[in-house]
Image (cartoon, rainbow, N blue to C red):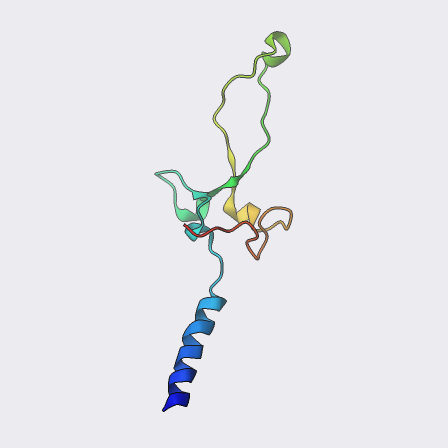
Length: 91
C-alpha cells in the first residue's frame, strides 16, 4: 500500500517538473487587446530605439512608443530567452 502511494506521489511530482516554461505564464508576457496570444511580446527585450529625423537637428529624442520583441522570436535565440526560457518568471 505504501509503495502504491509513493508511486502516485512520485508521478505527481515528476509531471510538475516536466511542464515547459510557457511565455503566456511569464510575468514579462504582454499582448495587445485585439491580438491573439500567438502574437504576444516579451517585456524583457525591447527593440532597438530608432532616432527620428529631427534628432540630428535639435538633439532631442522624441518620445516614441516602445516596441518589444515577439515571444516567438525571443524563444528562438539563446542570446535572449531560448528554448529553455532562461529569463522566465512565473506570474
